[in-house]
Length: 88
Image 1: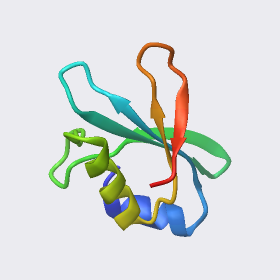
Image 2: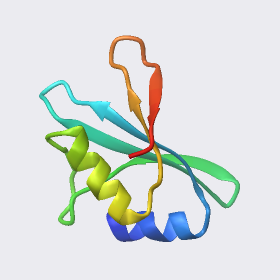
Image 3: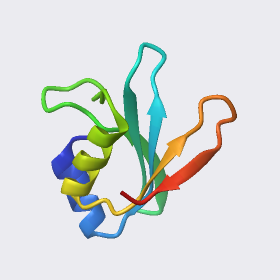
Image 4: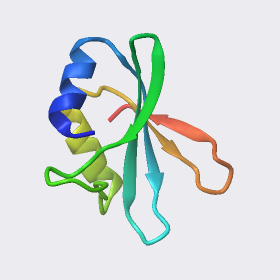
């Protein structure tokens, strides 16, 4: 999912969860869970030219999501799978 689509889904109130997850190779990926036509879907945030967008830091994740209109996201703990809310 690219940023313009994320903005549309946020404006429509369709976004249910936004999760930042650590990547094995380093950095962070962002996963968006949203509801569309009664079906829940989950997609990674992508680069403009395709492929998963990997962020070097959680601060970069927070800046990007804030600019897109996301008020809150969860950081997933890689050891337990549990998340904690981050309202940056």
